[in-house]
Each structure stands twice: as C-alpha cells, then as structure tokens.
Image 1 (tube, each protein chain N blue to C red):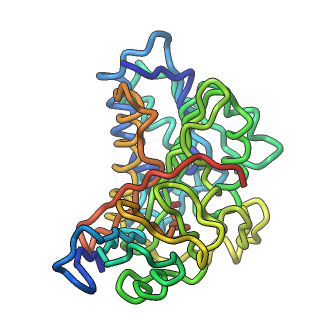
Image 2 (image 1 turned 180 degrees about the vertical axis):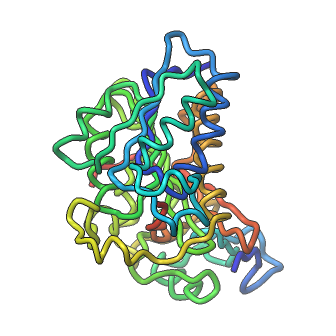
Length: 238
Length: 86
C-alpha cells in the first residue's frame, strides 16, 4: 500500500454518494490495510424523500431521516468493524474545517459548483489531501482528482481549468429556498453509478500506484457512448 | 459523440495533432496552425464550447491566436464539469 489516509469523508449522500459507500466500506473492511484505524464520516444536511427511492440507496423507513444519519446506521450494521460517523449538515466555508483534516481522503458527490469551489479552496490550504469529486448530467459526467502532498499540488484544483467552478453561478444548499431545493433536474441511476465507480477507481490508483504523481486529474464519461477519457493537466493557481 | 477520425490529409499522419474535448477526440493536420484556428476547425466535430479553456500538453494557453501547434503536441478544450450528483 503506497498511500495511507487519516480518515475518509464523503460529502453528499445522494445518488453518487450512496452508490459509492457500500463498495467503499467493503473495500476498506476487507482489502484496505490501514496502519491505524480509519474512520469514515458521511456529510449531508438533507433528508431522504420518497422521490429518492428510484435512484438513491435508501428504503421506505429512511424517508424523512437525515441522509448521513440513515446511511451511517445502515452501513454500521453491515460493516461493524468500521467507525462510521455522520455530520448531518450542509458543508460551508464556516464548518468545513470541523470535518476535513490534513491527510484525509475526501469524496464529493454534490449538485452545485458553489460547494465544489468551497471544498476545493479549503483543500488547497492543506498540505496533504486527496479530493475526488464527481458530477454528472443525464448520461454524461466527469470526475476530478485534486491531490496535494507535502504542501505541493500534484494535480490541479477543481476550479483551475473550470471557470464554471471558479466563479459559480449556482447556490449552495444553505442558500437555497425549499422550492429551489425541490426543483432538481432528473438524473439516471446508472450515470450516478458510473461516476461512483470512476471515483473509487481514482482512489484505488492513488492508493496503489507507486508513481501516482503521474495520475490523471480528470476523467470524462458518457454511458450512452460507453466511453471514458482521462486528462492530465498541470497544477495551476487560479 | 465520441470520435476518432482524421480530418484533412489522412496521408500525412506525421503532422497530425490530437484535439480533445470531453470524451471526444479527433486527429487533424494541425502542425503550424494556431490554437484559435484549430478551435474553429474542430468546433462542430467534437462539440467545443466557446468558453472552454484551451490546454496544450496539460498547460493552459493564454493567447490562442499566437500559440502555434508543433509536432507531437496534444490540444484539449476543457469541457464543463457535470453539475449534479445528489
């Protein structure tokens, strides 16, 4: 094992987050030999709703329960050797330092660029961090891998080549009203699954690839085309 | 649509340049052309957004009209990031 992490954080326990959590916990339980016990923290301020049943890893009894609390309970029951915690709040610039620390592996599957920007900016202040972010439209999407080691960027931050993240025009969930939160665009379960799979693949590459400094920073995917394409770009400051 | 095709003179692969955007990529006779020219040439074939950042060999291009592509370079136009995921 090349790379070791202090803790694993999962921001957004929705379509992507619930898809990656079970295989992540299975991998950490049975295949990941950490030098110290590792904790997994689930972060989401939202509650499961009936409309989530078609795409997210919840069941009828989870409706109206906070997503991070519900998934913590489910996963803790299945993977009782793991230390799984919940942070039942939306992440923002004020509370992010409470949950994301130096040396963490952070997965992010949120639905707005504002939160991506907050998390990327915060990670850019840490010496050692691996941030894997995924996002999708209906049948295409991308993942981004932002790595910092020993105070230096190995790959580009999320916003370095993406003006839509550098200057987000959308709002974080904290800033949205109930009506805006309800009005989410349709998504496809299989697309969330493809993104979750690419995010876990990125973690595997970082953990096991001796030469992970040469790793890709972004992968695009389209499930209708059955195509994915990685991209390597130099780290840069915005 | 994913693409892997040669535009222009297919008999001169030594001057071919890979141009990427998202999952799409194409090979064109681009050596000696500016990044701005290649953006215009490949816009429809690989669906390049007008706001997409141009990147050559992993490094951002500041002046697309002034930057001339040479042998072996790879040009990417960075596709917007997917927004949803919850």
